[in-house]
Length: 507
Image (tube, rainbow, N blue to C red):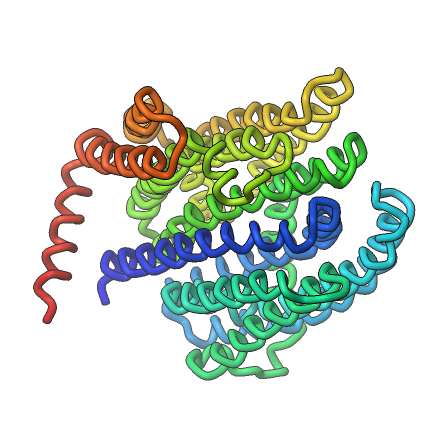
């Protein structure tokens, strides 16, 4: 399969999976909120944020491992890939044990002494935290295996596993409505069981299909590769830590100021944003291995071209669903949750705006990671994102509404996004003017067209399901047409037409 065809397949498969998974997650969240109640739902959100650091570290490590896999694959050395796999596996075994031993007492202390949790739910919260550590442990061990799917650009298969996970969680949410007893404990236990099942299945599958995943202990504890993995991941950690502390620190901040009920609103907004992130990340994940492999082959021109296109395409895919959702968010939340917690709508709108800003420059983030020299870049970006917390704390301390935290999100993300462009200019000579003309202006124009047509039905009709359908349909149609004529260039339009012709000609 040609690289361009594989890119289209991966993008289509992962985007389709993300759309279905997001829809299932929205329905399941309604049932979970109804079954648990706002307090327990908020507790699950804030307690879950305590192990997010481990989950986040998994993502960072997976990016580091996948980068070295893809680079070695680009050089065409199978033995080198196997050595990277074994080094990564031994490293993650040690790291999983270390983080679990360290995280257990710290998390329990925070739950018992720091977080604002009703006294009669502290024991249940401790159980949720302990059992969640199990899924985090297995997740970390699975990283060297799952990263091979990404490096080999087998993202369509990963999409199938992701869809299976979404279906199982959807079934659990429906079943939760009819479970007697402590539903929070039951929900936490079943969620962990689902995650562990998916991780173990992916490990077994990787062992079967990839010859590079053969375990060879003589390649374990390779100090040179350990150093490279830790160095790359360490600087990535600094950069991504800002985003993680921003998201989860804001949950703790809101808990300390307003209690667990406000965490329910923020938790629902985070689920919406997670769906947005999945949809846009599906495209970025499809581009990522090809960008890294191009850099490994020494094809810098193709690498930068793919990075620029991923900025534009990723933003357009977010606009496609985010803009009509932002316009009709009040009705969608009532339709979805019946009685959504206070501030949920505004939280959703602000976080979706943050994602739109983020995706406009995300392709250059991948390009810098593929390049490998990321120390100063990640330190700058991580520090910028981390400023969200003191800024949010200042807003809350001054008496602003809880949603002022979302304003802090947007401010720091604007700085961060423009900072990526400046770093791309410094490292690769990318023109800021070229990014403005090729990505920023076309995407903003498409977003305005989408918002105009999404808002138009509200001028004539009251909030209803018919108005929602009209708004979504008009917005999607406006996005597709304006993207075709404004955002896409001749080469991209020609590629899409040829791809569609090949699909239609197949028997």
